Each structure stands twice: as structure tokens, then as C-alpha cells.
Length: 360
Image 1 (cartoon, rainbow, N blue to C red):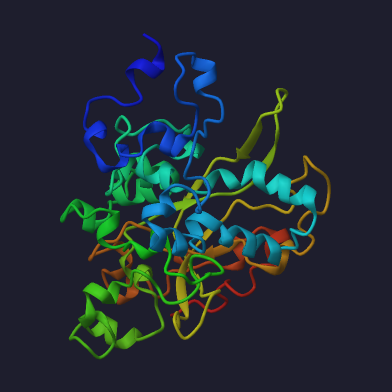
Image 2 (tube, rainbow, N blue to C red):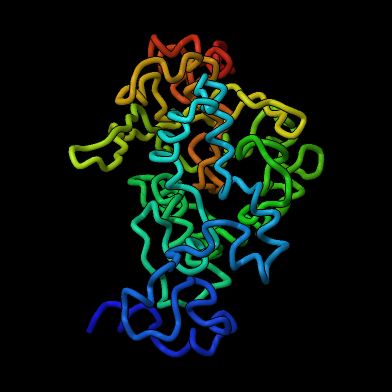
């Protein structure tokens, strides 16, 4: 049989669902009253949810309205950080380059609730069923499986997975609420803009300074992010990344091998919402010449931001090597981001996160 005859609808679950009510043409377009395949497919739209004012908005207007400013949909975090590094989004050529190499991470309604993300090759998750609760492995880890997935599931050699998964079987949705996917109507500059969501204190209020009897919590108060003491070990840092087109004109991203690191740095995003003096940091892959295939000087203010960025690893444990005792962390220079850890050409960019005086 032809592929379209055997895989797209699967069993009759979809045919009996509310999403079948408008039938195929109601969502995807096309021409009725013809048995000729090419004629029937004239005007067909592959992803009718690609635009938020499309078919999903007819029944889910409240969700599509907030999704317009969701970081998953808008990719505003990429725009914010690249613009601070000097990327000119006012240049149509630059917008096209961004669309070619960066917009693949943009998520539509269908790429979460029906198919796998395009960035991972696409493909329906379960016939054509519209899943209210999406797949952890096919959907969440389809995009977040490079770093978050291995950390959370305990797939990094020698590092325990997250206690919330290993001991309690909790999945992404039990910490990250729906507004983090669909948005809450606020146009955040990046994913660490605003209050930490989720916050450890949402479920562990007695961990707040002065609210419990754990001495370390009370001593450190707002000096340390929870991850500094409760991340179970090394997590992935990435280094040089470059983009271009291959001989067939297909876009590629070339990434140097990743490295496992554990570094405590100064908080580059310190604010009343994130008051900590020390946080975990990891190296990001954006290089000054990442767009060198297209020309020079695309990021003229590349060093305006650190290349070691605030990190929230998903490998939380109650007991970790660095919280075994006070001296398991204090005095251990190797745990802190010092000048010796930073490439000479990146020292200027990272002055705000480098630790000059390791706590004794």
C-alpha cells in the first residue's frame, strides 16, 4: 500500500475523536469531490498549526493567544542574546540566516501534540492522535535530549540521575507547569527572565533560610542557588559551534565534542528574583565566528555576555559530593570557575562570573 493508506490515521481512535470532526480538509485544506490524488492535494497545508491564527485557534483561542509570546514559539531568548552580541536583526539577510539555522527549534502546536519536532526529523508520534499530555521521550526530549535528558535520566557516566525521576517517577510536567509551554502572556527576554519557575521552594518551603532546621540552608541564606549543593555531579558543557550549507545546499550545525564540567561561578543574572551570589555555570557553544560561512563580524559585541552561563542542571540529589561536609566545597578550587578554566580570548567576556576568591 501507499504510505498515506496505512500510517497517517492508524486505528479508528482518531476517527472517533473530536479532532476528526472537521475532517482532513477542515484542518489541512485540499480539494473535495475528486479521486485524483494530485488534484485532491492541491492547497494542502502540511502543518496547519504553524501559525497561531490557524485551525487550533478556532477552539483554543486562549492558549494560542498566550503562546504567541511563549519562548517555545517565539524563540525570543535567541533574539535577545544574539542581539546583545551584536547580531543585526534589522538586516533581511541576517533574518534569513537565523531562520535557516535557528528557527528549527521553533515549536508549533502540532509539533508537540501530534508529531515529533521538525528539528528531530518529524514523524507522527501515535498515528494521528492529538495527545493532550505529550510524550516525555518523543516530544520533550526530542528538543531537550542533548543535555537535560541525559542529566535527568541518569545517562551521563558516573553521575546519578535526578532523584525526582529515579525515586518518584516524576516527569517534566510535574515540575514545569503548562504556562511554561503555552506561555502566560508575558514576553520574557529569555528563559531565566523573571522568577525561577519552577522553584525548589514550591515543594520544599522549609529549605528557605530561617524556615527549617538544616544548618547549611540557614547559613548560606541567599548566597547559593540550590543547584550548587544539590546537583549530583558533572553536566555537559559545549564549545565551538559553526553553521553553514553543505554541497547540496542543506543547512548544518557543526558542534565540537562536548565536555563534562562542574563549575560554580558568580551569578551573571543576579536580581531580586535570583539573588544568589554563586550559581552553577556551563560553557555555551556560541563562538565569535559561528556565522563565518556567511561572512565576517556578525557578532561585533560577542564579548558583551559571558560564554560561561547560568545553568540549572537536571541531576538533583539530596546528598552530593560537594555537600558531604563544609570542607567538601570550601577550599576546593577545582569546583569553582577561575581564570585558569577560561580561554584567554574569553577572559574579558567572563569577568562577571569568574571566582577570584574561592571560599576558604
